[in-house]
Image (cartoon, rainbow, N blue to C red; front, side, top):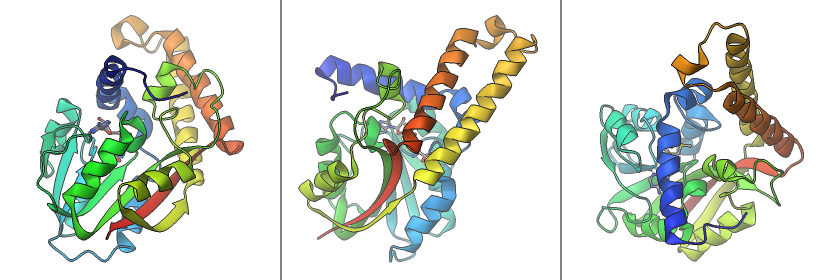
Length: 263
Ligand SMILES: C[S@@+](CC[C@H](N)C(=O)[O-])C[C@H]1O[C@@H](n2cnc3c(N)ncnc32)[C@H](O)[C@@H]1O
């Protein structure tokens, strides 16, 4: 699926995306870090980067703040930004955090020694603008740690639906696409790792947890009306997860980590 055609599409995508990631059900399915690899992947990426203690680090698309807490505990001055007001507020209990859009960062040129962007860029409609903003906000020699969903080829239905877009699937680029984006923004790519296994493992966890909900609905343990959980939506979610698992197995969908530096 191609990028949204109009500004209205882009706005709708952003607002749906912010609502989706702020939904408590997502945290129930994914865990505190709303993406593959969890904090182990963050820690492993940070260990490859020579960042002095006290460095100012931006977590762009910080969600509820799992990575912010990790950055703070490692002695960095962590700052978060998220499109969702609810998530930014929650993250603010962990470290300094503001509501804002990655396409227009409210920070001075060279404000950060590093930017972390975990599973966010795929959901940003204007990726070139976001990468330009990241490069601008990094000081000379500053580092970007980017991890995201990778899409090699076309997604199977119904993952190519709007819902799939929101789920950061159809908005993803190929590995080459991400490399072009980073280089186009003046960032030199110093490291790349495939983390497809972490995506597969997260999807398997989500499938198990949705199956529990399906079981609870079937035996009447959960009242769909009270829980706001229509059984057909749960079925659709499970079908989408199943297809995503197939897409990972076939190599269409993956997850990758890029480390890049501003010259
Ligand atoms: C998959 S979640 C990842 C959250 C967090 N980075 C983590 O690793 O747990 C994607 C996050 O990006 C945020 N987001 C999406 N588009 C954004 C944008 N244009 N600017 C800032 N944040 C955005 C969402 O609100 C959501 O919190």
